[in-house]
Length: 414
Image (cartoon, rainbow, N blue to C red):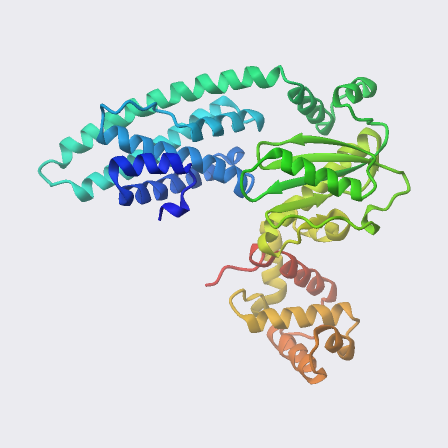
């Protein structure tokens, strides 16, 4: 369905006017597969749903444009779409190198060619299929050659504009600090317009779809101000993510201060307060760990994930493959991700451990009868093959991981 398109309504309508709706739906699927492949093979293009949608706009609109140009060679259309150019500019701002962009184009060409040739084989009469496939291959090669040239030209122009901008100077200074490079603090503070000698609280904001960076900046500033920040610094990372810092009092506890609600499409990760350049860097590293955990948790994640609240889980999940093996080993059949009954047993058992094995307290907390809690604990112990008191620390850790991350650490259904 065209409602699933990432391209602009104008691009979709223009393509439908040439080839009809059914081929457009096909091209939308091809574009999604191309973006999925590129993200898998070149992780620099990843980073969540927002960056994926930016990339998909380019792969999808390019497939649509190629389809029109192959069907109607005389149509006067540029080989590159505005959606692809938007992605090009985004890649520059995110620091993705030109060689990765060109490799992404090659991967996209391979996926597009495979899809077009498979369509030829399925739709063209057998006595004509060889000639048609040859013509499609040649035309696609010419299209991608022109497309690549336009992408390189725009990439280099955007990079020149970006390098001379104040935003680029701030981003470069921040990256030097985060990399641990030696800096002159007063000069760096002047470039950033932000006092690095103060106590800092780092924040990372991201959206599940591309949007206005200014909106993320407003949300990040509101969140930091509500937590006591007197000055803020924001560094956009593409069009769907933002790094930010706020200066707070040395003795402030941001966790105790109320903050405004976050829009449903936005997620926030927070570090711990830290003083000076080292604190600036350390707080951001903590926010990055909180962001990673929130992304792993997916829909389970709260709108705001604070490192202060999830630091233990973040450490346990540092190596996600090892964490998954640990959960499966410790929970056994209780790690079943397909059963609501098993999920209820895990929740009850976790509360049972956290409430010092008080059945009455768990019953009150979960709004259950005491007999139900006792039954669930016995059932869980039977599935574990041992009593709760055995390997209590390991069991508690595995249950916490399962609760926080769900399918990210629970074994795939066999």
